Length: 347
Image 1 (cartoon, one colour):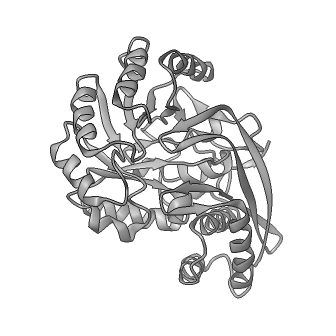
Image 2 (cartoon, one colour; image 1 turned 180 degrees about the vertical axis):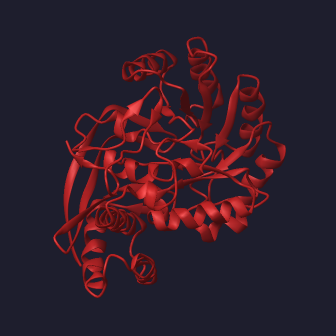
C-alpha cells in the first residue's frame, strides 16, 4: 500500500470567530492510498484546541512517519493499521486522513458506499446545523441571511463565550431571536469561554429562549467545572474539547449529557465508531462535528450520521474554493451519495 499526500489551502466565505479567536482560511492535506490500481481519498486539516495544536507542518511530518508504517500493510487490515498508527503516536488528524482514505479504498474495492458497508442509512434523520460565530448583533443577523442563500436551514449553532462577557452573548442572541423562525433547532457552543457561574446563568436564560443544549461551556481541562455546570444547568451539556477519543468517555459519565465527535480530533471513522458505541453504552447523546474540513472530510464523517443525535458538519458549506464534491445539501440535510467509497469526487 502506497501513501501520498499534498497540501492545499481553502478560504472561508465568512470568517468564523469563537471564544479562542477568528479563522478565515485553513491549511489542509489531501491524502491518497494506492493499492491494486485503485485510490482512496482522505483529508487531514490543521486545528488548535487547548493543549493540542496540529499545524500543517507538523501533520506533514506525521504523514511522512506514517508512510513508512503503512508499507507493511494492506488496506483491508484497517483495524491493525489504526492500532499501529496510534501505537506510534501519529497525530490524530493525520490518522483520520489515512483512515478516511482506507475506508474510501475499501468501499471502492467492494463496489459499495461506505455507509452501506457499515450497515447504515443513506439519509440521516438529522439536519445539519450551520454556525453563526461571535460578532455584533447586526452582523449575526446578516450571517443568518447569508446562510439562507443555501436554501432551507433547519438547525443553527450560535457561538458564545464572547471576551466582552455574557451581556454581549445575550445581545447577539436576542438579535437572532428576532429573525429566527420558530421551527429552527437552536444550540449554543461556548468553546470553554464561560466561568461556572456564567454558564449556569446562561443555561437558564437560553432555556427560556428555546435552545436545545449547550456545548463545552467551561475550560475543557477542568472536568469538575463541567460536572458542576451539568448538575445545575437548565439545559443538556455536551462535551467537545474535553472528549477526544473513546478513552475519555468513562471519565465524562455524570459530568455531561453527551459528546461531540470530530474525526480529526479522534483519529477517523474507525475511532469514531468506538466512541459512538462507548457513549451509547453510557446513555450519552452524540453529535458529529467538524473543524475546517472540505466536502471530503465532512462527507467522510457524514457516513455515520444515522447513528447520532445531532449533526454539525457545515464547514464546507462556508468555503469559497472547496476542491471536492461530496454529500449534497438539500432541504437542510446532507445526503450520503450512492457512489462506491466515501462518495467524494473532485470539483
